[in-house]
Structure formats: structure tokens, C-alpha cells
Length: 247
Image 1: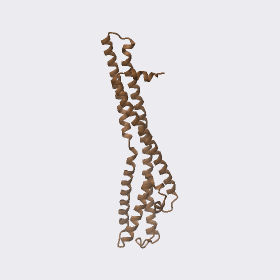
Image 2: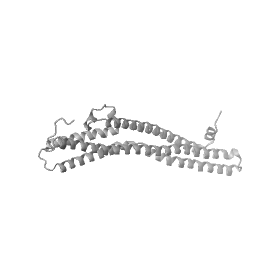
Image 3: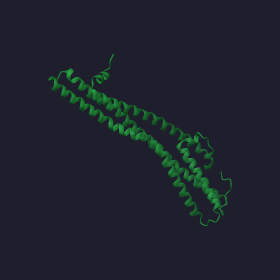
Image 4: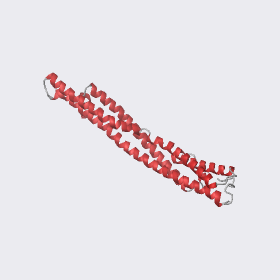
């Protein structure tokens, strides 16, 4: 038992079948990207959430490096490890520079370096979030025009057959009409999911980026606070004389 869609495909001409084949390939690419991005962003969101919950319970920034390796695989965790690394670097520089006279200027430079480092890592980490999404935008733009091309071609074939056979009967115009309809339907069927998920993944990626950007600022503030506590609270008169085991 045949279906109307299959009948229209069989009635369409060579050009219509070529366009439909190209649209089907674009559809396969579209859904491959959709499934890949959906699971990838879900995994990133879950990993970031797990790390953030564990981070809130830490007593010190340096404890990030002692977390389970699976927890440290998320992008937010990688940024946290970078913050812990900068924390350790600043303390080591403070211990080695014993002759510093202006500690405010010294620490300000150190914190600026740490901020630049975190910004660089943040930019590198969020770049993969948009992987494949631009291709969805292209497909959502190309597919309707391919469908429109098939529509125009089918209508032209119908007029050509009418002029060639001198009749406008249904058997004469049916192949052209079928070609026009099926290419339009398939073109829209490819373009609509591509456009919908393009906007959907952009929104999800933007939310994750905002969460990571907020965590970056929180992390830097915590690094500053803990360093100030170590350098000024414990030994206010000698900020460079920090304990050897700062972790």
C-alpha cells in the first residue's frame, strides 16, 4: 500500500528526485548535529552543576585540585583548576619576593595576571559550545530555497507538458505538481527543525556561558580573599612570610 508522499516522490521528475535526495542528506546532517549537541550540552550542564555544588562545600580554593578526576572533567571544573593554579602561583611569588615594599601594587599585578588567565581559559572553554550550530543556521536557510527551486521546476514542467501535449488534464500536469509539492514539503521539513534547534542550542549555550562567567568572577573574588587572609591576617606585619604549606 503506497502513501501519498511516496506517490508524489515517484511521480516527480529527475530534478525533483535530485533535490529531494540532497534535502534528505541535509536532514540526516541536521539530526546528527541535533542529537550530538543535545547530549553534549546536557553533559556539560550536569558536570558543571555537580562541580559547583562540590565547590561550595570546599574550605579552600586549593582543595579543587583534590577533587575526583571525573568531577574535574567539566568546563567549569577546568576553570576552577586554573583558579587554584593561579592561587598557588601568587602565593609562591609572594614567598619568593621577600624584598617587596609596595604589596598593594604587587598583589594588584598578580590579580590582574590571574584575571587575564581566567579570561583566556574561559574563552577557550566556551568555544566548543557552538560546534555545529552554525551549520544548522545554514541548513535552515538553504533548505527552503532548495524546496522553492523544486517548486518552480515542477511548475515549469507542468506548463511544458501542457504546451507539448496540448492538454491540461490531470495525468499531464500531475508529475509537475507532485514535484512542486513534495520538494516544498521536504524543504520545510528540513528547515523547520534546523531553525528551531539552532535557536534552542544558542539559548542553552548562552545560559551555560553566563553561569561560567558568573563562576569566574566568584572564583577570582575568593582567590583574592583567601590570599589576603593568608598574607595579612595571619602575619600582618610580614605579608611575604606565608606558611610553606598554604594548601
